[in-house]
Image (cartoon, rainbow, N blue to C red; front, side, top):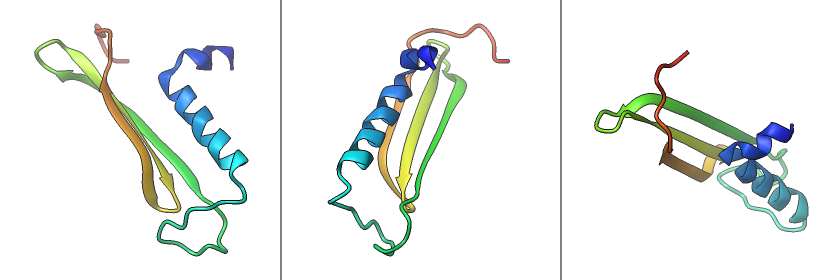
Amino acid sequence: MKRMHNVPYSSAVGSIMYAVRNTKDAFLVYGGDPEAELRVNCYCDAGFETDRDDMKSQTWYVFVLNGGAVVWKSSKQSTTAQHAT
């Protein structure tokens, strides 16, 4: 778990979980039933050598709350990978 603090999306996950946990008296209905259980999904991926000019890869993530995207980010990785495994 300690090494997860070095992963950029771990701070985003922490922020989302903090907001969800500490705002129980307020809620967001995002095209769903307010009586239904809250569903939070996260999807992420990285493309190898997405930018052919500098050979850097692209990383993205999106958080989906009850079927609607609420947080997303896409960014170029700061280092260049020599190969994908």
